[in-house]
Amino acid sequence: MDIVGKAVLFESGIYAKLPSDMSEALALAALDVAGAPAQARKLPKEGDSVLILGANGKSAVLCGYEAMKKVGPTGNVVGLVRNPKQVPALMELGVYHKIIVASATEPVAVLEAALAANGGKEYDISICCVNQPNCEMSAILPVRDDGLVYFFSMATSFTKAALGAEGIGKDVNMIIGNGYTKDHADITLNVLRENPKIRALFDEKYV
Image (cartoon, rainbow, N blue to C red; front, top):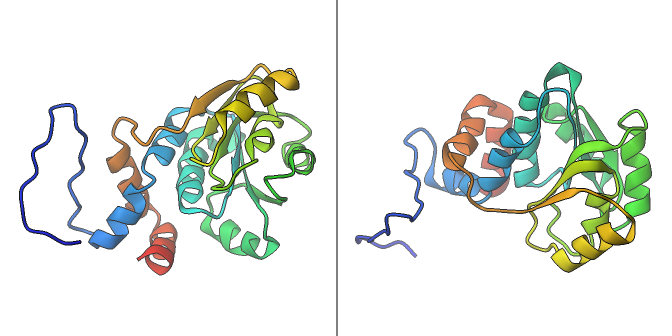
């Protein structure tokens, strides 16, 4: 619903000014998931390996772009999709080093494919962007002890995540997806400015 009016914001409230160099629909599509790419910029360090589940979604694509920049030439950013037909277009975007195909609801299959794509090593970080239940263990299993699991999906059961990690003896740090991260709006909108391919994808799919 479009209105003309005024809003009163609390001092602690968050807001973002809509940019003048892109359409309102495009900006809102990106800002809807702005917390994820901002975390993907903050959490990895150079040389890290990062696994992103649900790699074809808009939050995952933005995360992949930021993670690729952060891990640098010695890192490894791997995306997971269920549909093999999505692989060529994702590789063309240039936001993943590799794409693996498996269902995020099948953790053993994900583990095997993920390790094969990372030289047999467990990952430093995983980011779950799959918007469906029962993907918790697929995000946890491939990550090394003391590694980090970031659940951006609101379909996550934190009971399953906590008890599942305990059940398999995984000492990982788990982060609840937070829609706000410092400078998240600017970070996310800048991805669209920096990468014409991602901007074209968002224009095609979400506007």
